Every structure is written in structure tokens, then in C-alpha cells.
Amino acid sequence: MSKTISLISPVDGSVYAERPVLTLPEARAAVKRARDAQPGWAARPLSQRIEAVRAGIDALNAMSDRLVDELAMQMGRPVRYGGELGGVNQRASYMADIAERTLAPEIVEDSPEFRREIRREPVGVVFVIAPWNYPFLTAINTIVPALIAGNGVILKHASQTLLAGERLAEAFAQAGLPDGVFQNLVLDHDTTEALIASRSFGFVNFTGSVAGGRAIERAAAGTFTATGLELGGKDPGYVRADADLDAAVDGLMDGAMFNSGQCCCGIERIYVHESLYDAFVEKAVQWVRGQRLGDPREAETTMGPMAHERFAKLIRSQIAEAVAAGARTLIEPAEFPADDGGAYLAPQILVDVTHDMRVMREESFGPVVGIMKVSGDADAIRLMNDCDYGLTASIWTADPEASAEIGAQLETGTVFMNRCDYLDPALCWTGCKDTGRGAALSHLGYLAVTRPKSYHLKKVSK
Image (cartoon, rainbow, N blue to C red; front, side, top):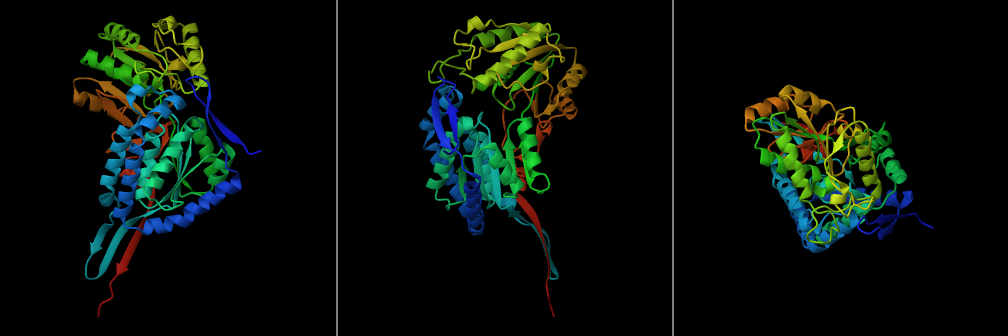
């Protein structure tokens, strides 16, 4: 009997989808199809590849209603938010728009004696291992530039969002991509690691946990395969004394609670200047009490269940440990009757927290945030940097110069001022420390899926 992966819906605990897992020989055959198809795809004019990828995104948009319903059942996001296609369109469009100038040869010299230039060539086959929390947005970050640059792409999607990979494959097939150029495969961990270890790919992009990133690095060890690793965060927000209080509350609390807190760049800890602390906390509690936890298929629901019961269990344990160490909870779970002790988890605000508590140092990835009082910039910078992660940091202030000075001292990949929890496709998406390495989006995103090739051409003349 072949092994299968079951997708358990957090909405009602039902088996929403089941798919057979490819054996290693089957997976190797898929990689060969990609390798065989890639040279012909790369030989097409860049304009044709761009047109085909845009057509694939259009085909995905045509599935919009189905995607929204499927996302609700697969990972619990409320239908009121309409899926991810707004962000998908923005990122795909930007990467397509900059492709020609980014991939154009860099001419060093073109004289009667020499032509010297640097070109960008595809790396071959790109392997994208995508997460469940934003199953289309995160995948598109690498898929679009990889295809446009002339690579074949193999996608392995998370077991919690199996259907997202299938919809992407459907869309690109409808767009007319040649067979083998884009493939969605259902793989287990052992086969995934075996493919990487056998140098199947020119580039591997993984978005997921630190443990998963370490497994990818171990599998790639000695193969010289390039990897891009985005491994999550513990992103801080800092509210300075001159901040717009209402804007800070709305922005940071939405950043902490949207998608039930299941965002790589979601806000997980907040530091507030002592002059605003009490007012901020009071307004934050009011903001949370305005949310509705429930069935994501209902239009009134603003927070659905977490994607899996085990994720909610981690959050409950972090909260319990913090309370035992002296923290106070400001939200009674009874205020959210849908909290069932399982995947449906009431949002929570913690105060009297310290960095000795796991909830302030380890990734939570759920609807909980700790709020601490700080005396000023130096105090906030010290605490914001006191973390093993470095993805984004959010500063709320009326002073752009002060924000830039603070940002220069932060160990993070992105500095926001007066916003958070957003990816700008014109800026690279990157991180430091345990958040991983590499850069997606912007022109740098093309550098990850191509390699430089130098041409030193001496012109023969009489």
C-alpha cells in the first residue's frame, strides 16, 4: 500500500484531502522531466516566458472563489479576507516588470578590441518547499522569478495546504507552460532530503521552521547546492513617545492577530514607551475584544482556528508558563466562546512579561502578544535585539530620522516605520540570525535563481 498524506481541516477536524506520496524513483523521474524540459523553456525569448507566467497568474485569479473557500477549510483563514490574490498579483506583476532590466547583460566594454559582459543564466531546476500559512504568497516569491529566468520549478507544498500546490499547477498548465517545466509533487521528508542530497536542484528555497531549515542544510551539505532559508521570526514593535497612539494600536494589534497570528512577520512582542504604556494596553485590549473567533466560512468571523490543534497547544503552553512565572493575561478565554481547547484559540495579551519567558523569546506563531514598558530608545533597542530571530522590526514614531537611527542598530532583515506585517516586492525579503539567509523579491530575487556567466570576447581585426 502506498503512503498517503492526509489534510485534516482545522475547521471541523474532517479529512479534507488525501494524496499519495511519490516514491523516490517516481520523484527522481519527475526531476528528470524538469531537467529535460528546462533547456527548451530557457531558450524561449524572455518576453515569451514573462507572458506565459503572467497568463498563469491570470488563470490563478480565475479560480479566486474556489481558492478562498479552500483556504478556509485547509488552514482556517476567514473568507472575509478574500484569499491572497491581491498580494500574489502585486508581487508577480512587479517581478515580471523588472525582469528585462534585471536579467539584461551587464556590458563592461564594447569597443573595437573587446566585448566584455556579465550575463545571468538559469541555475537549472529550482526546488520550492512552501509553507501553509500563506501558501500562494510565499510560493510565488520564488516561483515567478525562477520561471521567468528560465528555470524548471518543482514545488513541494505543505501537507496542510496540499490543494494550493495543485491549483498553482493547474494555473500554469492552463497558461501553456511546457510539460515538466512546473511540477507540483507530494513528497515526504525522507524523499525530499534524498533528492536534495543527490544534487537534483540548482537552488532550494525553503520557508518553514528552524528545525526544517537545519534538515535542508544537512541534506545539501557537500553538494554545493545554493539554498534560501526563511525560518520565521519573533518580530518586535516599538512605540515611541511621539507615536500616533491609535495608529500604533490598530497597526500592531492587527499585525499580531491577523491570520490568527500565523504570519512569519507577524508582531509577537511589543515595547511601549512608559508615557504611553497604560493607554496603549487599554486600547489594545479593546481592540482584541472587538474580534470574533469562529467558523472561517462565516462572513462575521475575523479570526478562524489555528491551522492545527498542535499549534494551538504550543501557544497555550507558552501562556501557561508565562503566567506561572508572573505574567498576567488581560483576556478571559470565556470572552471568546468558540475557544474549544483545540484548534480554536482565543487571542491573548500578556503584560508583566520578561525576556526570561519563552513567550517573549521563542516563536509563538499564534494569537498571543506580550507587551513591555520601556524607558526610551536604548532600552527598546536592547530588548528588540535580545532574540535569536531577525526578520522584521516595526517602529512607530513621528520622527523618520530617529526611526532610521534606531533601525541601523537593529539586527533584522526589514525595518518598518508606522506599519508592519507587509512585504514590499521592490525591497528584498531577507533575514538574519535564526531567521535564515538569502533574499527573495526585488531585483535580488533574480540573483538567487540565476548564476553569473562572464564573457571576455577579443575581436580579431587585421
